Image (cartoon, rainbow, N blue to C red; front, side, top):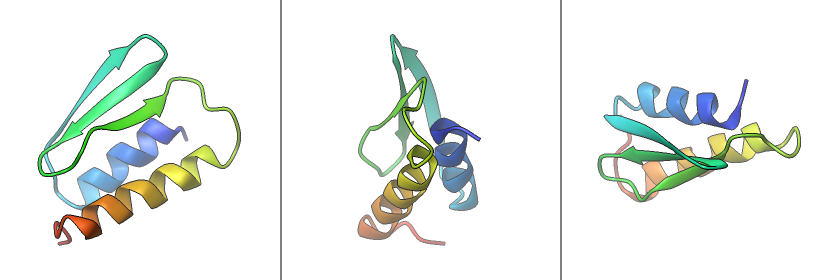
Amino acid sequence: MSALSVTVNELEIAELDYRVERGGKHYKVKARGLPLIVCSVTSSDHRSELQARSLVRRLIKQNGLET
């Protein structure tokens, strides 16, 4: 699983609309009500998925978008 797939999965669980764009070496994930989320195309280590999950969950909570 990649950081992008973890990010998309968390957004789907929260039932948020999102759009993914690829720009060079990064994916840009735009979700309604959240700041821009940037994911590397090639993750550097095994922790990237855990960090992506943590980031998205934290953003969802901070912006009051929990379901």
